[in-house]
Amino acid sequence: RPGFSTASAVTDISGRGVGMDAVKNVVESLSGTIEVDSVPEQYLRVVIKLPLTLAIIKALLVLADGATYAIPIQTVRENLQITKDQIKTVQQHDVIVLRDEILPLYDLAGCLGFSPLNVEDEASLSVIVMETRGQKTAFIVEDLIGQQEIVIKTLGDLIGDVKGIAGAAVLGNGQVALILDNSTLLR
Image 1: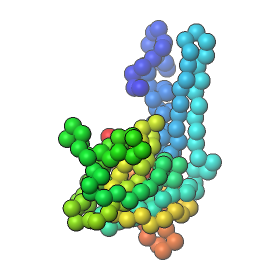
Image 2: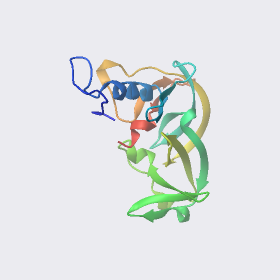
Image 3: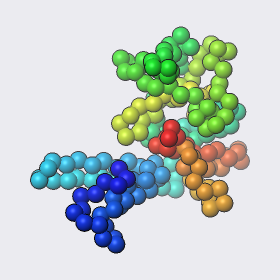
C-alpha cells in the first residue's frame, strides 16, 4: 500500500513507502500479479507473475456499447449467460450468485463511461467473470466475440494513462480494440 514502510527512518532514497507500491502498479499495468507472503521473523516471499510475452497476449474480445474491447484471458475466470431474474440487489448494488458465491455485477459500458445496456430489453445477458488479486467481479457485456491473440500497443504520451485501459490492439479486420485493465477498471 502507498505510504507503508518498514524503515525506521526516512532518507533521500528509502523509508517513504513508495517502492513496492510503484512496483505493484507497473506489474498490474502489464497484466501481471504480485503476491506477498510472510511469517514474522522467519521469511518474506514476494512472487511477481508476468505474462510469458508482454507484447502478444491471448484476449477475449467482447462488445460493449457497440465497440470491441479486449480482456486479457488470464484475468477471465468464466463467461456465462444469465437472465435479468438472476440479478439480485444487496445494499443497493447489483450482484449475481454463482455457485454459492455472491459476485458484484457491473455493466462494462457503464464502467467505461458509456450508456449501460438496457437490461429490461434483453432476454439473456452475457456476463464475464474476472478476477483481480483474489477478488471476482462480474461484468455485463453486449456480446462475446471470441478469443484471439493480440499485439499490445501503448496508448502513447498524447493520450496518457486512461483508467481501465492498458493499451490497444489492431485486430485482423483493421479495427482497433482497447485492452481493458481490470485492476484499475473499478477505481
